[in-house]
Image: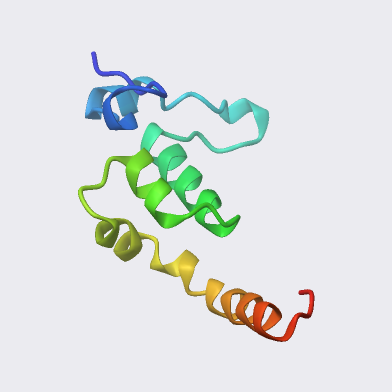
Length: 97
């Protein structure tokens, strides 16, 4: 059976591992059941949304290039444009954000 463990090669999950760990969050707890790939996608989305550099996310996910990561998670990075503009403006004009 496959596995889905942190620290495994590229933190990847096999199809069987995804099924084996689909009960990580119990349906009886009021949360929907989540598979390994759902947790992986959630981690990447939260990491990017909280400012983790995309290169770090790419390396943690084991994507071949940063372009793959940015293509998949572009919905997260789109909201970062105004934050970036404010940070650069603060650096130029010496104001705090």
